[in-house]
Image (cartoon, rainbow over all chains, first blue to last red; front, side, top):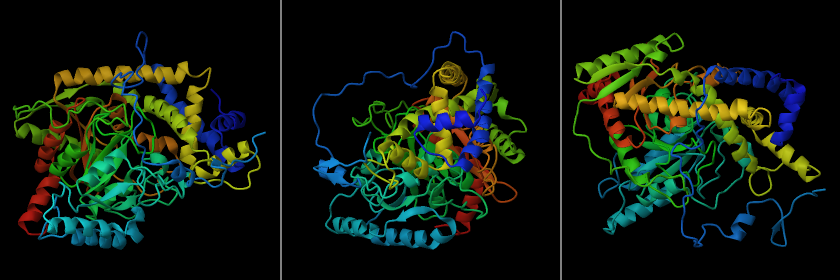
Length: 95
Length: 477
């Protein structure tokens, strides 16, 4: 996998952030170095091995479907944002 | 540790901690915020003691909180610009448990932003300095917490450990650092890094304190469904005082500093002299742990950090025009370079065309690693390993070379991938006077026995004998 300015720009887009030109240049060599390092996993034979995503292999941990009193109410949560209108968070135009 | 009583007021304990915090802060940059209002909580504890009310097991004990635990006291920043100004309305479960026992938070400690790093240099607020040498790093990501305990500001501090973030700064500063079995302490209210690896743990001055903190904070939590059914303090007690300890052969090479290898050999000899059995083990899959870690962790980071968009809380880039630009500018300005590297690597290894070769491959490597540890614990009670390849390195030495920085984690990440408990035990110093720690590793749920035995290792080490000497000379209270 070759990392160039095009792949850096694509990954920044997937990651939803802007990069300065200088940052983009640095990231090109940084990412290439990291990908080169992690690619050594190729050497490891994993044939017939199942993947692990969670060490205790837990699944479907249930609790009663009861609403518990919450620590924060709507007003408190809305107070954390920059601009509120009609009890909603205001954002810039979407389209 | 000392708790408040009629003879020792909580106010005097908290005042002393705050004075030390302010004294050391300008040189060491330990805290992102110092909680001067902590005195009020101490007054309340003293009032309750005077009234004969029951106070908890940590009554009046001042502690430092890594700044990635949510509480309404001060801003929770995770040392990242993107959380600037965030005053959490909720409190982390671990914090609730500590405070229910009367512990009092005197400050929030510095970390690598979002806990991404091994030196605390990736903090938006600047690096924390090593407690023994101001030209060296504190280690990371929980650098501030390690230094707060090492300098004697507080008897304990909280940390989080995703790949070594408690154990490595503990070893760089000569204190105990414990990462429990995955799922032992609730992650509720802790800023997420990589959810299948993140653990809450502690820095402490001794193993009795560590045990008490675990007794208080361990336990299942309905707010974190990955927590294990309660086991800490309920495990079977092994009466056999003779242990079988394995030293991993694969790390006895030039990648590890000679002084650290010498410390490990000396400790192995000491254990033998004390009647324990020491064996050597080969664990060939271990050397692939770091590559697997730097695939799985960035993948989980990319997902967890996608929530930070400038809309609901924290920093927002102004004058961005449309919504897409607002997201991109907020995240572009709000994340540190290391956050960006990890998010991009995460999105790379998860993207179509690369998923099988990287993410799936790493998840399979994780299985092999777990099998290798399981096999090892059929042959021994504990593993003894270095915590990191080097003692504390110089500020600026590795921060511009991400792979060199990642290699500092080569000995610590495997425990997180396998969910195992690990205790960083201070055992001595290098010639230059830098602390050296060794890592004692146990099987899942073997936490308490591990902490107990870690205390024994420390007592018999060079560090332990120096302390005994200081005690005899009256140099330590």
